[in-house]
Length: 437
Image (tube, rainbow, N blue to C red; front, side, top):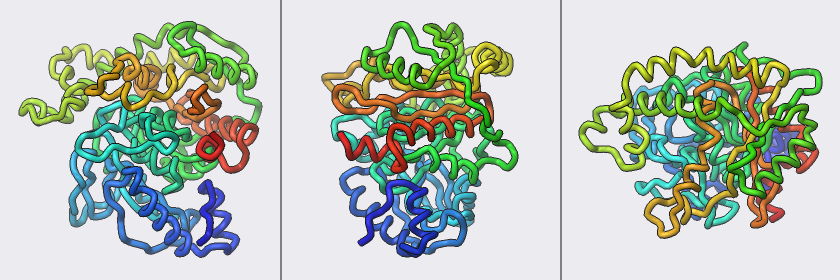
């Protein structure tokens, strides 16, 4: 049996060089998916189809968060196992990957209805973090993170409404890209808060994410990468960061030659509150019937229930002011700079016991910390990338988050690729953190 390459780019090379045929590559990936996931619980349903298709992704196995329509199947959205639906077409993001030759091998676990900063979902077995069985897996795209980190698939589509791609990327040492709102179609994706929802990507390396992004993004919307040296600004909060996280971020900012470092971001609190108003109001609209019937689980109610009583004028004002806030943010932080470096998680990756509400060791501060630097980005609609940069004293990854102007994902991924090659080599971020602890 061939050893599977660590990255999508590596598997493409194996197929294009003739070391493996596309069908052999998919067969090997499917065997690994079936065997390894038995101990990880990331898969909701494995698809038996083994056909391979021509294209740049021939021989590449993918699996996606169970929130996307797939051909002939309604997604389970973390609530059930999904159902057959004759005539249902795949979401454009999924269909574009398959048209490029990718094989969709499975759909993956998630927090119920995409509500939850962790992937803990009592309706399904808990996903196991490949880095440590005790470590929490961020949500809501938890199954996607576990499957990609464990090498079961080479990439996964997720969704991000308040950090649901970036949080699990940070807990599993992945590249997690939240795309610009509207860059990737949301057709065929079950909504949570449509004004904030974005399709995102989870991969093991930055080039892999760029390759998939160019396929799923709407044509002509992506801006080319900046040819000159990118100008970097860093927001490193003066308080609220664990000392190990703060030290890693300061070292990274200096190494990246940040031209300006700030200790406060005055807009953060206001933008976070506006994001919460929009998310809660729209989540309540999405789940209104079930809310009124008291038919939702506590985790979903925690996100949506407040939306029933938020004054409509607050919601409409938040949406009306969105463009103004985005313009002001660019003028202040991304006019003289191309990228804004900031924290992903302010604390080390927590154990499950700290973020599970019915656990004796539950710590609400650690649960809230998972998304404290995430939601405001969705309100702005900007692209954001998370990737690992260091280890803490327990050997777990510390990740950074980097923002760019709308549709400048290429700048984010080019920057991450430079960091990746300089620090970890061609096998990417994740392989380093899995195999050299």
